Length: 176
Image 1: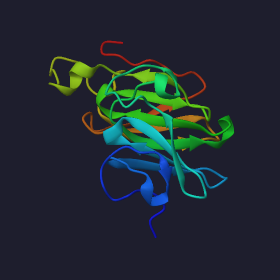
Image 2 (image 1 turned 120 degrees about the vertical axis):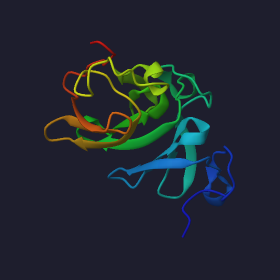
Image 3 (image 1 turned 90 degrees about the vertical axis):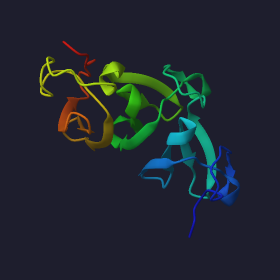
C-alpha cells in the first residue's frame, strides 16, 4: 500500500496519492505515527500524518543553505533523517553535499549543528590530515543514541563513522 506520493517526480503537498516527491531518501517515524521524509530532489523535509496528509516541514525548495523556520530555511540535498525522542521529537538531517547536519524542531525551525567544508567534495588533498581530524565530508546515514546523547554519522567520502555529542555540538572544519 502506498501511503503518499503520486509515483511521478514533483513537489506538491496534499493527501495520499495527490502528493508528490522527488527522490525521497530518508524516513523516520515518531511515537505518534507521523512520518518524516527527506525529499532530496526538492531540498525539503516533508511530514506525513497518520491519515496520509503530506505537508512541508522545512525547506524553501532552493538548493542553498540557510537556517530559519519552515520555508525561510534552505536545505541542499537532504539525505538521512532521525528523530530524538528525548528532545521533544527534534529531527536531525544530513545535508549531504554541503556537509552539514541540521537540527529541525517540530515547528520547522532549522539550525545547523555541524558543518564541513564544501570544497572537500571536489578533491581530497593528500596533504590534509586524515579523516580522524575534525572535518566532515559527504554525510550520509544518521543514527541517534538518545540515552548517551550521541549522533552517529556515516561519512561516505572519508570512509569513516563519526560520533558527535549532542550535549555540546561542534562545528567541524578543515584544519580545526
